Length: 276
Image (cartoon, rainbow, N blue to C red; front, side):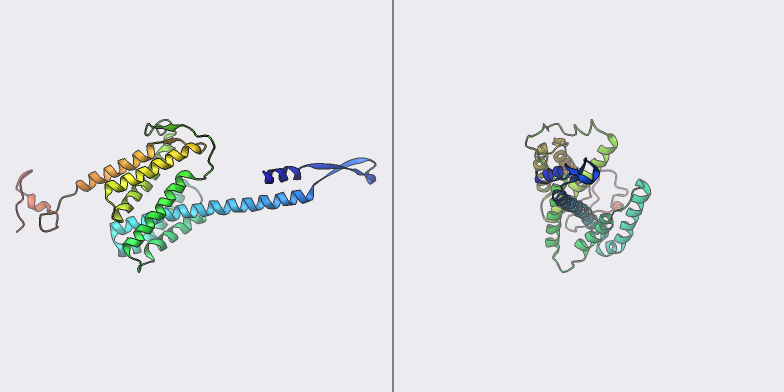
C-alpha cells in the first residue's frame, strides 16, 4: 500500500506560477516521493527477478538429480558418470531443435548442479544421500504445486472427480502436464523405495502429500484443485507394482532367475525341474 501510495503521489503534478512565462502554469513532479518510489520499485523488480531465477535453478536441479539417480540405477555408477554429459548435452540440443526456444542459464546450470549433488559426494553413505535427495525433491514438488504462494482469503471449489479438468482443457497442455507430473510423482515414490520405504507406504505418503497440496490450492487463483494428482500417484505406484510382479522369480535357493533354455521342450506351464 505504501509503495502504491508513493508511486501515485510521484505521478502527480503541482501547479506553480511561472513569472518568466507571463502567467503560464507549469507543473513538476514531487521529486522526493518520485525518487523513493522508483528506488523501491527497482528493488522490488530486482528481488522478483532473483526469486524467479532461483526458483528456475531449483526446479532444473531437482529434475536433473532425479535423472542422475535413474541413470545410476539403470547403467551403474561408472557408466552413468561417463554417459551423463553426453545425455545432458543431447537433451539440451534436442530442446533447441524441437521447441525452437532459447536456453536459459538455469537450464545450463541445472545439469551441473544435479550432477554435483548426486555423484560428487562419494564419501557420504548411500542411505544418507538418498534421504537428502528425497527431502530435496519433496520440497520441490510442494513448492511447484503451491507457487507463487499468493493465497486468497476465500476458498474456491474442490473437485472430487479425478481427471475432470484434464478432460475439459487443452489436449496439448494437459498431456505435457500429465507427463511432467508422472515423472515427478513416480520419481518421488521410487526414491522413497530406495530409502527403504515399502512401495505401498511410499505411494500412500506421496498421495496424501499431493491431496494436502490440492486442498491448499483452493486458496490459489486460477488453479483447479481436485483429486487428480493423488490418483495419478496411486496409479503410477500400481503400474510399478504390476511391473515388479511380472519379473521372473528366482529359482529357489539360488537367487538366479530361471533361464529360457530350461523351458525348452517341456511345454507351457511345465515344471523345469531342479538346476543341474
